[in-house]
Amino acid sequence: MTFSDVTDFAQTEEQQRVVVGELNHRVKNMLTEIGSIANQALRSDDAAREGFLDLLNAMTRSYELVSRDQWGAVALRDVVRQEIEPIGMARLIVWSSRDLTSRSSRSSRFRSA
Image (tube, rainbow, N blue to C red; front, side, top):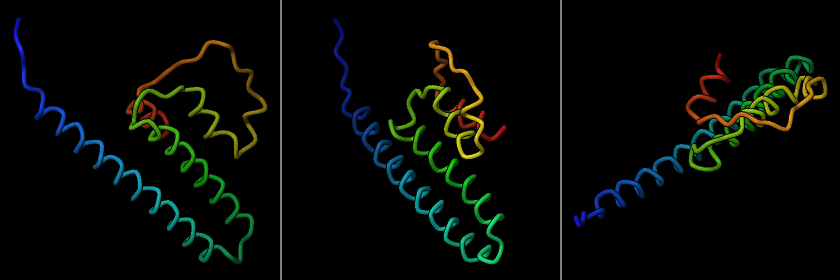
């Protein structure tokens, strides 16, 4: 029987959790600032402002979805729904009972594709 000291591993894991939490907080703040700037810059063009803010809000919701569990697994259905809901496409899709689950790193590549 072999025993291993996992103290360093546990400390590293905790540091990573704190750094990811801070990163998530900063990204959310940045997205909020982008929304504020867009609101001011596009105040004379309601259609452009609403369209841009709808897309930004979809991106924000998707980011919150994949980051909520420290970038764990996320249902691909949920990511797709978050992205297409603002443009009215969600009502056109028939969702099956079977769902795909994607690692967050893959889902973020999917969103930017």
